[in-house]
Amino acid sequence: MSSGENEKSRVLVLGGTGYLGKRLVKACLRLGHPTYVLQRPENCMDINKIQLLLRLKKHGAKFIEGSLSDHESLVRAVKQVDVVISALSSSDISTTATQLQLKIVDAIKDAGNVKRFIPAEFCIDPARMVHDLEPAKTLNVRMMDVRKAIVEAKIPYTTVAANCFAGYFLPNLCQLGTFLPPKDKVCIFGDGNAKAIYLDENDIATYTIKTIDDPRTINKTLHLMPPKNILSQNELVEMWEKISGTKLERSTMSAEDYLAIMNGANPIIQFGISHNYPIFYEGYLKHFELKEGDEEATVLYPDVEYTTVEEYLKQYV
Ligand SMILES: NC(=O)c1ccc[n+]([C@@H]2O[C@H](COP(=O)([O-])OP(=O)(O)OC[C@H]3O[C@@H](n4cnc5c(N)ncnc54)[C@H](OP(=O)(O)O)[C@@H]3O)[C@@H](O)[C@H]2O)c1
Image (cartoon, rainbow, N blue to C red; front, side, top):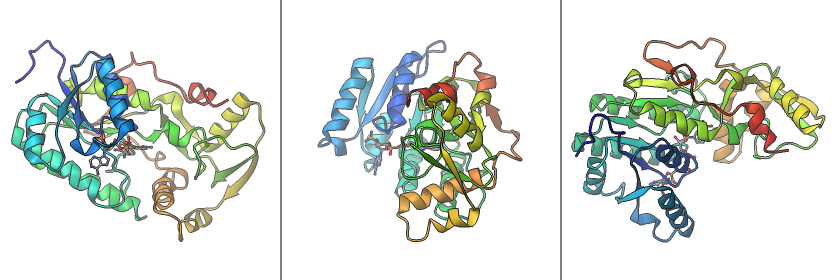
């Protein structure tokens, strides 16, 4: 089955009940694509997921039953669509996330009809995050393994470098251990001048769906770099103080002290620190430039009115 030339691609989202996945499903429907969500039998006792699926159905989503541990069911599922997007959790420190993504690659390879696959990355481009800090190092290597498998299977793909999710980084002014704004104190990492890029998760979904029928992004990485959302931590803190009318007491943390938090910390904090260190201390954007095989989303899709950091922060006042 394949859709006609002028029709929008039919899309299957895996991980459609997830934090990003549900936004991808909604964006897909909003942009007029016939949209399918993989309904996993393993979720039959998860009342929140079932209720969420019903809400997505009201928006127009359809379901295809299938399990990541049942290859034939996955092949049947992907055969019904043109585009597959994986929004599976990839921050799993175990190998599970990679294994699951490789199962999707196998199914797409066997189905043989998919015009575009977007694997679960949606973070800082793993090809550029070459550093030695575990566990982030291993996760980057695993994402690159999935890319390699996609290329070897000759599956047309786009990878999305979504940088920092707003909900995880903005309200807390990049502090660890909370997703809410600090009340009186804020810790500045190093000199606080390293820039990072922040994206509203709904905009990540919109840009991702915009790219799926776009020949300019085939076999490329789409970088999401909204110019107004490239800010240093110092700029972010000042912006929040202005919006909220508060003044925060600043302390600074050296690179050594930041890394020392990892000792004995839980795996989520360890992942956060190893992932964030290159952002805040090494300034990963300092030498960043688009290379062959890269495209930038706000250049390709200037019609998307992205949410600025300032607009995003205002929700938390
Ligand atoms: N750049 C950033 O700041 C940032 C922050 C967070 C996430 N991300 C990225 O965003 C993407 C999605 O992450 P997320 O936080 O939205 O994920 P999530 O909500 O933790 O999980 C997404 C979905 O993955 C599926 N899933 C999880 N474990 C599974 C398992 N063992 N077997 C089968 N399916 C499983 C479930 O889908 P169903 O039950 O619906 O099938 C779940 O709803 C990832 O690539 C992640 O790296 C980036």
